[in-house]
Length: 307
Image (tube, rainbow, N blue to C red):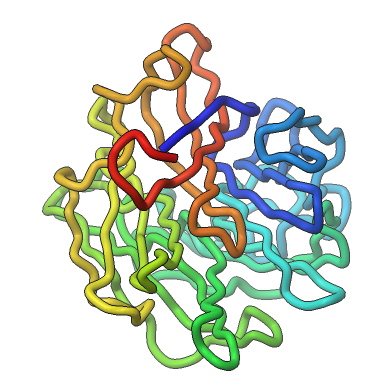
C-alpha cells in the first residue's frame, strides 16, 4: 500500500464524478457546517479545495425532523455520498434522534441533484437500532450481479465503551431505485470481540479474484486504534468472512508511517466508487495538533511493498 496526506476531514468518504473527486466529512461544529466537503479536479492526490458551502445546510431543510435538532447540532457523523442514478445523488449519515437516548444514533438519507448538494432529507430515518447506535455508513454497489445490487454497510452496536456490549458490521440490501427501501433481512458480516468497541467505519471492495475485502477500524478510544481487514470465503458479498481482528492489520498506531512521519489513530477507510485499489482514510500525527488528515492510498493485491 502507498499513501500520502491530501486534506483535513474527519470520518471521510470519497466520490468520483467524471474527473472530479469529492471528499465529505463529519460535521464541523465550530463552523456550524453539517457536511463539510472538499473538491479536487482530475487527481485523488491532487490539490484539494475546501468548499465554503454546507452540503446539507442547517438554514435549508436541515437534517430531517426526526433528528435531535433539525436545524442545529444533531451530531452528524460519517456522511457517505454516492450516485443513485443519472440525475440524483444520495447521502447516508448518522445523527442523534430526538427519540433516542444519549448514546443512540440513527441513519438518515437525503437526495440532491448535485454531489455538492443541497441534500434534502427524508421525513423519517432509514434505520434506528433498538439500542446502542448505527454509525459508519457506506453505500455499496455490487456490479458482479445482473442487474447490479445496492447495499448499505454500517456498524450496529455500542460505540461508547459500554461494558458487555458488542458491535457488528452489518450489510443490508436496498432498492437500486431509491436507495432507501430495505430488501430482506440485514446480514452481520463480523462481530466485535467481547467488550471491544470496534468494528467502526467499514468499507468493502471486490478483489481481483472476486472475493470481497472488508476493511474496518478496531481499538476505538485507545492507542491500539487500527484498520484491520477480513476476506470473504467465496464470491458472495454477504460472506461468510474470515475476520482476522488484530491479526489482519492494514494500518495501526504503533507501526504505520507515511512520508517518514508516524501516524496515530488511523481509521475511516472508504474506497473510491468502483475501485478496489484507491481508497482514503483519516489519521493524526503528533505534530499536527490533533487534526485528522485525509490520506489517499493505493491497495496492492501483490507481495509486500508493491502498489
